[in-house]
Image 1 (cartoon, one colour):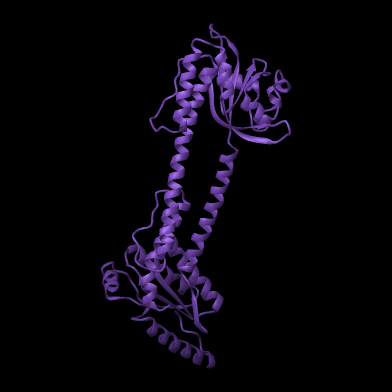
Image 2 (spheres, rainbow, N blue to C red):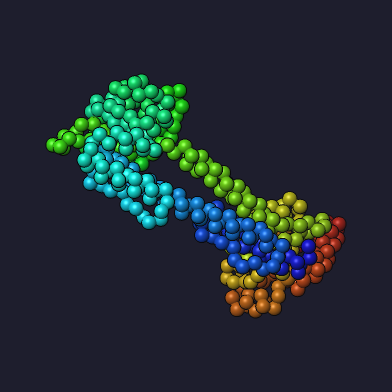
Length: 385
């Protein structure tokens, strides 16, 4: 690819790298700017579509979590024989509103018929366990029995530790002591153990069950199976890891080091230079000079979109680092507007060879290489950089 083509394509490449970095950092609002008509148009469009989908999924997850938490609160209140709580109906006319409306209707019926409580608990999608004060299981709803794989007669009056994961869940006495102080536990990550010994990750909520005199009768535990949520988190981490790897690959591709002949390497810079990419430029230069035993490193800035204080500082750092390992830097491709900017910023380029074009820089490097070869042939010292 010639210099002009590289310069034309660099805005999309830089934009692609920026959006990928922001998505990898968790910024779901990141979007690619308007296309520059380059070859990466389809990729930018697909990346924006992916970002939109990710933002929508995160918003949906947050909304669902809030609604489930509210419905859990209402369910805990109902389980504690408090029928004054009502589930809020948002007006979105979605499944949660349907569940909330149904729960509210059932609560109204419960005020006149406590027998209906068992029907509500049985219809709950989350597992519910009611414990005696000694920590044994007094009752379990249908969801709990299905999740744990027990028949009702197998689990009633058994110690709750039989189904609570020993390493992940608090013991019944410790929960009772906590609930005396706080009245409820909400959505703590824990685990249940099924009849077959499988461990099921859950979000555990708990509250006290009291009589009319406010005396403790037992505990109510509500467990929401978060297996799918855990899988989604693992998948998200896998995708984010892949995005980070791709970002690193793009970073490396955006700073290619090209050996053009013995003793000379070229590093063309394309696009914007941020702090991360500036560090990559210096690292690539030093590693390439050492690997190829280069005497001259040509730093071509033809494709740099603009020069400000940050870009100028990055170039100077690369020049100084290169000199420290005994190589000479030739700076090429300084356009008139870049020259004016660097002059206005008072950038000191003393001792740095500058050429108008990459072709001129390569010609200079050839001459410098021939001169160095003649000096080495005479046994003379190498010129100081």
